[in-house]
Figure 1 (cartoon, each protein chain N blue to C red):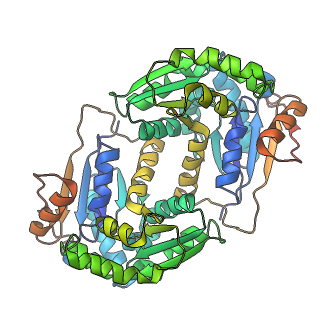
Figure 2: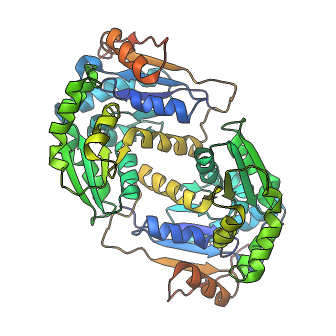
Figure 3: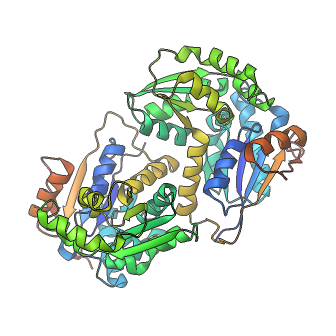
Length: 270
Length: 270
């Protein structure tokens, strides 16, 4: 029916974990992704600045004629979704509510951990999303800012990563959580290390993957799926910084060999 | 935020399996249910008649000031959802797409079975919903009309039920399906017998339970959840026939002792 692409925005390359899931779950959909690598990380920035940057990325994607917009970034979701969503004519999906819903469904002992950037943790968006549904649930939130730079610098599979993961997650030892929300789209890259450190009894929730399930529900609900089944979804990638490292990390993550990101300046029309 | 109830409609009492799931997943939401027991089963009726009846039930629920409408009936979903949904101002959810999505996610060997009423099978709604997403998936559909009367007559836990289940599901023996959609909201009552007959390697998909997950996504998406967490959701039940058998079956299924259905005439204003 609707052949327009789905837009994904992120502060950097972390949102590609969401794109990877979208390519798997929605093989006939075209995708446009923009990562704001020139200005990452968003986590430590004031909310107003995150809102301004997210608007710029949104306007760029709207020019690509998208039919749906996904905030593939927890910080952007926490700070800007509620402001931007009501002003657009197309459906807008963030990563926080899908992650919160999945955690509520998963926990058995009613103790949920959340790791995210400082910005997301300060916003208390996960805690609110969870406890607005059930105030009896315990939520243990922790900012782990170092994880983003670990991933963006391509060191997520080096020995230093294991050391930093152990250091940062120390507060969860003995906390009794049985579910941990990976509240930043960069963190799935560290998933094996996080799972190793916390042990197999803690269930990890990938908010990005959950968001794609919501995208799938809404594509159906608004009847805007691409129904041309002969079509293999194409993905186009844009970055605000040099495409070189983007291409390298993105190729590693997505197993796409010919991935060629284009550099764009989203501030030029401001 | 939004304290209006969610409306559920069904041809009879089968939709109560969906209500039961809604009470579990959405404990703060009020619910209004109407079952058209006076005119069940819908399965063998022509599509136009199902549409007319479903409009009557819809109008009754709209008068109850509902904020969302759930077609807790596969036949009504197959025949009337696409006609009624675009004409309402509130979100409308059916049971077929959620069931189809869950089956696609669940199947490993890519062979999915569907059991439903004649009406639903004739509409080919499940097959379309599945193969519109992935034409490589095999779908084996079977009408099992006797199951509805088995449930509505309260015989679903009598020995005769086991015999009829074995008889009707015979065509699936040796079919190699690894996933079976219970494509009628009455069938979850027969779930233990169906699972016994097909064996543990076949995964059963309860379309109604999946629809409630979609309701949950849309309540969040449209920001119409009831955020008064001190409120325990109330359910009101209406039937177009005598409330006596309704109350008995409903009490058995829902474990609600004081359930008192009211009889209404939905045709009076036609």
